[in-house]
Amino acid sequence: MSKTPITVAYGDGIGPEIMSAVLQILEAAGAQVTPEVIEIGESVYLRGHTSGIEDSAWESLRRTKVFLKAPITTPQGGGYKSLNVTVRKTLGLYANVRPVQSYEPFVTTKHKSIDLVIVRENEEDLYAGIEHQQTNEVVQCLKLISRPGTERIVRYALEFARRNGRKKVTCITKDNIMKLTDGLFHRVFDELGAEYPELVKEHMIVDIGAARLAEMPERFDVILAPNLYGDILSDIAAEVAGSVGLAGSANVGDEVAMFEAVHGSAPDIAGKGIANPSGLLQGAILMLVHIGQPEVAARIKNAWLKTLEEGIHTADIYDERVSVQKVGTQEFARAVIERLGQEPDRLRPARFGKPSPEPMVPRVERKPAAQKELVGVDVFVDWKGQKPEELAAQLQPLATNNLELVMITNRGVKVWPGGFPETFRTDHWRGRFMGQGVRHADVVALLTRVAEAGLDFIKTENLYTFDGKPGYSLGQGQ
Image (cartoon, rainbow, N blue to C red):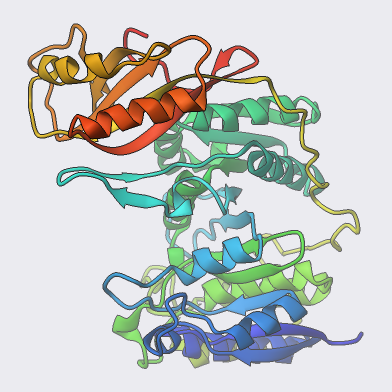
């Protein structure tokens, strides 16, 4: 077998220690890979690269298309971008796949039969990182959910379940509140899920879904979630299963894939030789399956399971009730290497099939555009008053022939007409203007009048209908 070039980053904190251990295990197991080492993380940030990665590293990633990455440290303070988010979005790694298993009784957990996979959307949602301070008192973060992006991740989760013999997919959103964004995610899940009649499909609101994951993780099989919820649920699942330190992660796109541990760089224990390399090793196992070396992946996983069974544990999972020997990073790696070729006696041995030559997700086909009509505009203003009727008295005379003031809100709560004096208010107000036959010129004319009246408009959102259906939240009383 010809060797597959992979890009490797040793990272920061405990990263160099655990990466060294993992690469030793890969070599001893006969993994056919050729590592190309790049530098990323804290040292690159401090050289003035705000993303934590240089051009030469991008060249390697785009050429090998496989990235095994140790945790990195982002310097404290503003001006530094998340390297993970940068890599995921730049290279189109839209699917974050996190398998979670329990290894009871060898790793202590209240739940003995956890075997689930979380498929998390990796590019959109609040992680778009589009934030603004608009007034002295209010900041905002934009939540972006696209139909093409949602179709890709929903299809990926359904196909993953089908190809891996899974029985159920649970979609988790908060669409009882965010009816447009999370509503779109849920709706696409229902639409595409109809093409997979052999799978059980269910939907949960994120709060009850998280509670049930913490209390009854055995009831889940594949969990599908938008970016933020998926991030939170992944850590809940890993911790409930025994330890975040045992969890690996795959970030998969159409062209490139990145594999890593779920945990961070743990600078407080860096250099002490006590870090658990298991999370990064699980990421490397996922990588081996991805590049078509499932036999080597199973060989390593089974040796690792055997090591756990025999009670050879690092400090983070050491428990006197089940552990036999407390070991450091290198000692743990040597123990795994010594057990290559063995299988666990009580834990279920690992078996991995070859990846399908067919792509997990076909190219998204854009649907015909809906009939889009401009029907109004929301004008957000920074206004220091407290009485909404006084703001209404200023805004109403500014209306044009085609745009009439119909509502004022504060932080999304309607305060005019018919608001309550008990409603808490900040300096962030929204005036909604609606009309018939609205043109962009009408919006510009309205904003000109607002500015000439001395009101500070800080943001606008055009209001559209799509095939006659409102493309905006209606708000109380609308």
